[in-house]
Image (cartoon, rainbow, N blue to C red; front, side):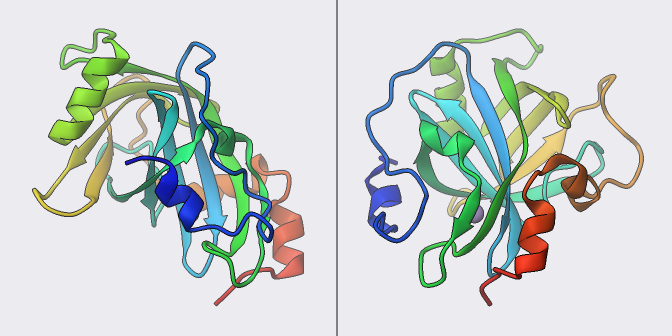
Length: 195
Ligand code: MN
């Protein structure tokens, strides 16, 4: 997917989101999870790859519990600059609602044995519908997998692997939202949600 779709869906005169430009990689791969309080609350999970952010919308948010398989719907690539975006997307615009950064950090693509692998091999894995990676975030840590569960369509599952960071407790991303996000309280009081 090119960034054209991202640009086409948005009116940049009316939304504070960044317009996609050709990006220059700064070394090290980043990830971000944005809590998006839109018509339906979801968490946008984004992994930097080849100069863009590969993106999935996760209705229930990510989990640190390996028993949870969280539906992750692949959406259009976003520009790298989107990783810093927080704020309100005004009514009438695509994705209208409030966006907070829920977690961010770096990630490392790994192979089946958990050994680091190059970005291009990871890209190949994504095209084949199965990747493994290690997140180094503030909330999300350790090994995860994204697995496409149907040949057709954009439905994937985000699954935590069993490692020293995994939790056996019931995990709700919402429980961690207030602590993390600077704008969360503000957003709630303003009621900027679109329905
Ligand atoms: Mn979203």
